[in-house]
Image (cartoon, rainbow, N blue to C red):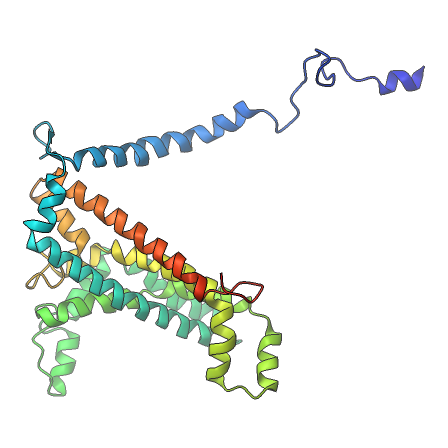
Length: 320
């Protein structure tokens, strides 16, 4: 009798199909989960999804912030490629920036990560020192300093003049202005460097020992061991830095004074979008530009992932 009473189920917790209500155990209350998720859902709908849908609608309208939007269909998109030569210039400037700054930045990050991967008592200090520019590089203050350093009469100009090279300031020369912004981007290699360093720590030491036994040189070891084992991390950094390069705005705005000069040599896509939207008050036109940028980044990212199957290697040792 005692055994039967002890094995009896408490009331309200009967098995399914008996008609007895089943009491939720701890962690099985979906209402509590929805309550905690509601701030994130509300923020996503009000601050991300809602504005995106609004900008998509505005891209098909003529809107100047002061009057009601007027539907114009695909007119904004047509004008971008047929009636706006500065838009095409901004595409070319941005592509050059992405294609030059991204590989240089990743190369610098990987080189420094290889140096820091060696045991050192001051490794923590060097990590912080090299990572600091990534925290400061996108700020307005650093961009202003960069403009002075590479401006007419700045330290770079004075140093080159001392050895007989007259530039007149890189910022004011169409052939050098973009290079200053590229150098600023490369200087911010700290974030990918930390990620590369973490990836290097995960490579088994036995692979390097086997390469040493086979008599492999440093370059052969780097090419046959380090790069393949680090390829997933390289892909990760490549995708992130490519997206960031397409979205670059602050350095170009500060260095060029918000105009994209000289001679539109620093007219980045995002800077021209800002000019059309917040200077000319053509919000519909700017929205069309923003959506084309989004589609471009999506296509480039998809291409990177697609081509990665030929050169990214995972645990099994095969490309995917």
